Length: 150
Image 1 (cartoon, rainbow, N blue to C red):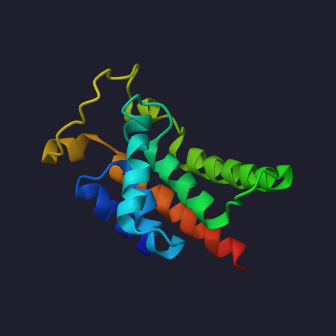
Image 2: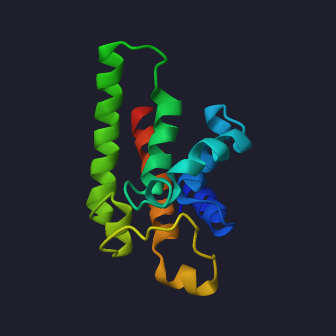
């Protein structure tokens, strides 16, 4: 298990949203204080505000990717470079997990409708694959960064 994978899982198990867990695992080395990272990532938990759309672990992974490689300009070539990186990481996540859609990963047929997060109980952790998805996203990004540094 990689350092980021372990830290992301620990954050998730402390009750943070999947998006917060992944971005939070990278915050320090990306020059973000952890509190800012956790605040920025919160809306993306639960498949974006518990709408069960794009997996929060994927959103957190992509926010960290942007903080690592993003450009603060509107140059089309910089957008194209980032979009290529995004597509590669999403491809890898889908290859391992089958989807990037939260409700599909959870085996739901429709959004749950309520903005109230489920209680984090022992039963919750038994039936939700989220901790593994968080770990996967953090690991994939770490592997990708190492590849880029070669």
